Image 1 (tube, rainbow, N blue to C red):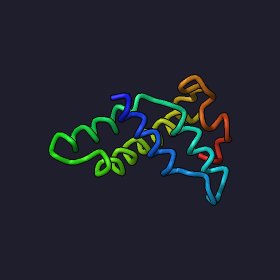
Image 2: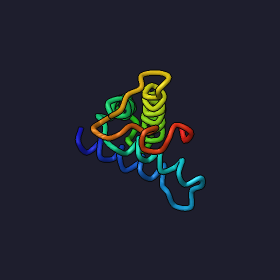
Image 3: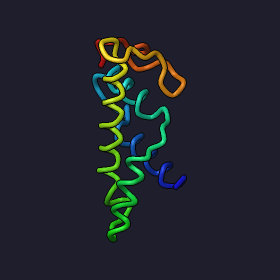
Length: 104
């Protein structure tokens, strides 16, 4: 399981690379939220399900990353002042505290 989580984290890092990305602040905010950890349970199960029916990790990785990105986007929205108004997630200031509500 640990190796799969590592592979998911690496794939997410590549998927939202900062190289030549504009607007830079938006991409930094995306990376800040998405790459700061997490259990990665949903993408793990996506890959495991694919492998269970004869697929490979590389076949499932795009869908696994998409699932994690959607999950993270939902958490970002939930943390906004008009919703949960949280201050920390995974031990760090939440996205709108770090980058401002307008970046969301």
